[in-house]
Length: 367
Image (cartoon, rainbow, N blue to C red):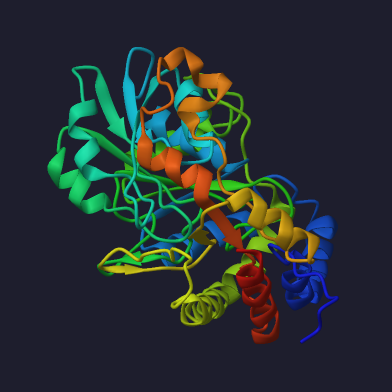
């Protein structure tokens, strides 16, 4: 075991080494053809990722946050509406609701799998509730189908930023809600070399709406029947995403094998391991454990070259940006406990068994 090697939380250099020649060749083709905006590589990626996700349509956009906002707008979410989402998610989920003009309404999560608590949704529903955003957190899918069946009058928007390739009861991430949004931020299971995202749907009308919204509200150049945005997937990013999509299933398999090794090595430790919801095929975007004295453990790991991290140390309801919602400490106890105890261990396709041995060894020593 190499005790001096630094082990990162995410190793993007390993991924780049796997696709470098393919990416350079694709970028050369883009520059030669000068197809920089919505070029053929974008169309090809949209088609292939739609098939991968089990839907009819994929619309590439500028970021995962844009994808959520445009998905909400395409579903008619507007000022005066309320949208339910979990308190333990990245703030982009809530910001997309705010940007669409609606009000985020937060609910708690489940203690074992960290996903939105279905039992917490009904008490949060009011006459203004229009939509629910179940977040597919850390690599596994929330119970979207069950939520749709329980609330048939509400729009269900999947936040699939962390679940590319995940499956629940045979249905891929992005294929179960009315519409789905995903992010291709560099650290995702399939990440671009900058910001990028996509909206997924099986509905032709929703797809047509997003198609226009992302491009100045226009389906025909210089004709703008509605107000839209400039949020289009760059062609150079589509080149990267195509190369990674071809490897995503294998890379997710490597993540699953690494997660299984962590589980085996930590099973008899005092660490609280992540649970997989029945029916889920997890793609392990993150491997999140829970432990007492988390902040102390994190410092000790980092001092020993282990790139552990925290997702997310402050729940949305305790962020200053959303103090106006009126929540406070104690509003969502499960999410708050998770924020104080959660620790993300290094997780990426190229992590070796020796690396994991060292991570676990240093983790046990740090407790």
